[in-house]
Every structure is written in C-alpha cells, then in structure tokens.
Length: 521
Image 1: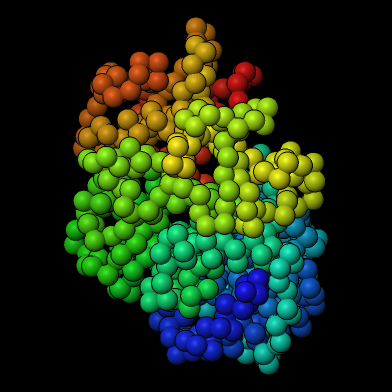
Image 2 (image 1 turned 90 degrees about the vertical axis):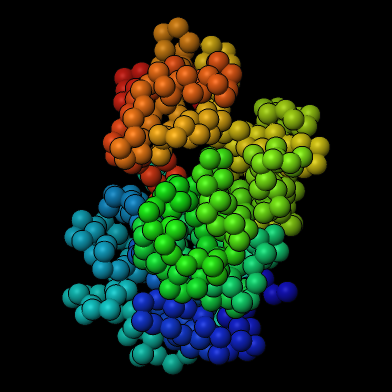
C-alpha cells in the first residue's frame, strides 16, 4: 500500500464517490466534492507561496473545513500543525514560531488572538479566515482559496516525508513538536480500523477536539475507509447527545471526562442512541464506575479502551468490548488497557533498560511503524526518548502472561508516600465509586512525616453531600491503607482540563508546592 494520506481521498472518490464524506450544520458533501475542494484548496495554498515541507497551522474548532485542512495541506506538499484551542496567546505564539509556520488558518472564535499576536509571528506570511462571514481586513478567505483556483495535482508526499507536527503540552512547561510522517499516520490508521472495528458504513462524530490525535484516530482511520464524518464545534454533553441522535451516529470518541459528563446528563435517557455501536475512550484512566454506568445505559454499544500517546500516532493498545466485563473470569482484564495493537511491539523495562518480570511495574516502551520520527528541533530530547529502538512512554505499568497491559500511572504522577509507591489512578478509581462524587483528582502534596501524602480533590454531584471523613472511610473499604487519601478538599467548579480533556494535575498541585522543591518525580 502507498503510505500517503492523500491516497485515502483518491480511493474514496473512485469507489464511494457519491457516499457522504462530511456533514456539518447544513453542509453535506460526498467524497467527489471533498476531493475537488481539497485539491483546489491545495492550489490556493501553493498560490500563497507554500512549498513542499512548509508548515501550515490551524487554530479553530471542529468543522468539515478542519478535515479538509488535514488533507489539502499534504496534497499541497506541506506539513499540518494543528494548534491546541485551549492555549493562551503566548503559547500559540510559541507553537507558531517554533514550527516556523508560513500560513495560519483561524476561525471566528480565535480572531481576538490576532491583536495579541500582531508582530509576534514573523514566519507567518498569510492568515486565512476559516469562517462563513466576511474575511477581516488583511485576511484571506478560506472559500476564496477554493473558488479562485483550479484543482492542483497531488504533490506526492508519502512514506517518510513529514506529514504533521503535533505539539504536546503547552499548558505546562515547554511544548514539544512531535514529527509524524505519512508512514506513521497511515500505519496508525491501519491499526485503528483493524483493532477498533471501523467499517465503511459507520458515521463518526467528531466530539473531541480535532487538533488532538485521540480524535485523529478517526480523522485518518475513518477517512481510510471512506466512512462518513460529522462534527460539533466543541464538546458539550447536551450538544453531543443531540448530534448522536440527529445524525444517526454509529461511532465516536469520549475521553473519560467527556464520558462522565454524558452518562451523568439528564438527557442521556431521552435521546435515541440506537444507531450507536462503538465508543472509543482513552487519553486518561477511565473510572470503573463511569464505564459501568455507560454500559448500563447503552448496552448495544461496544466499548474500546485505547491507550497510546502523540509520539506513537497515537495507538499502542486496545481493550476490546468482550473484555469489558466485571462478573466472570475475564473481569480483571477490564482494568487493563488491552494488548498491543496490530504492528506494535511492547515491553516493560526497569530504569536500567532491562525487561521486568511479568506483573512487575516498570516503564512501558514501544516499537512500531507508528512511532514518531522525533521531536522538532530537539535532537537531544529525541535521543533520550527513543533509546535502543524503543520509545519510552513515561507511563508506569505491568504486563501479564497473556500480553494485557495495565497502566498504573504516569511516572511523573506517581506519589511516593513513606517509601511506598501510590498510583493516583487507582485511588481515583476508588473515590469515583462513592455515590456522591461526580469528579475527582488525586495528587501528592508535601507532608513533613511522609514526604508526600495522598491528597484527594473532589467535586460532588449537585445536591449531594459528603465529608472528608466519608471519602477517606470509603477508600479504606476498597484499597490498602497506605494508598488512601490522608486529606481531602472539595471544589464546586469542574477540574481544569487540557485541550484533550485531561485533568491538569500540575495546576491542582501548584498551591501545595508553591515555594517548595518537590523531591520526587
């Protein structure tokens, strides 16, 4: 198979030319129209001066145009740089400048950023307005790039040619541009359609942010098969439920925070979700109580737990629906993230780079055609991340005799209290089983006696009550004493989230560690 993202679209226009490609609001188009638009958009980019290897950034919410961008940019020979929509202007400035993007696409919601970014994006030569109104002065209208140009020939980028820069972080520390080639992303798409049971007749709802590769599993996997895409600009549980019903959606992605909001929403039992047959989740640990509730509400749906990271395009493992059981001999496997996906090799290593015995905690490492080329302009960091051919994920975990992987925590999120390793995900899973808890996060905070102590931050359901003693006693009934929270605080507002829907534990830790030096990783 030709390892080129653009090949997906040529094939779709050839064999499913009249099938629906995208639906967004009142706009619907088939794959023939999609091919025409992306080839014209590519011509427009080339007319702006974009040449092979140039970077083209996009700061926008989900839409059909976001999907067009992902294929028009490589059609023009360039490299896409999707920008996290939760970033502050200085962080956007860093991503644009670090990538050296020559063109910036931007939608209505982010136009106010331009005033703050004026004069701070020296590499940007053109700004393209991705909206339905009149383009602001000095901006090029997205639609004019299509209407004013004849279709361009595919630039022919493929294989090891760079396809995209996907930045990680940005809400803490210095962001890193992950270099993913056409081979990386096509390989991952093949892994996805095989292990998550994608099919050409599915309808995928882009509910998660399209800048993130968690949703990108379908951006490329569904496009590989010529399946239909529909979009909501950004996730809101009522909007997502409405879209699932209206568009007869068959498959979607809900990261744990999204899933929690959906199953807890009063409309979940009022919507017709009978067409829904597959939900993918991942990006952070899913509390068992939440997935149990989801299975109870949607018994016809197959749930797939995917584990991976941006550096791996992103899929590494999948736990299939048959293992989402809690009351038979397979029950323990529901706590795993599944087994290595097609084409991926996994191993668990100690700090010395030696494989640990099965069932022993170590760092999860991987090999495969989906593993990144490296970090953009960061050769030293690349060398420390990919060693002896293995990419080091930074996740602590175990593997059982049958190859099922159990992620215990991010190495940096592990709490060392009194010499014992405590994995925050395990404690959070216990807390989520309390009937009054709607959201929680567990972090390590400084403690004179223990070095660090386990601290829980909890948000209660509306109208529910619980004390810190209630939460701690609840945990003592479920997990070992040393793992239980020694202190609890309650908050009324939702947890701070990254653009990918992960709880920002660094932000939650800050008040406790201010002025102190953390002695553990």
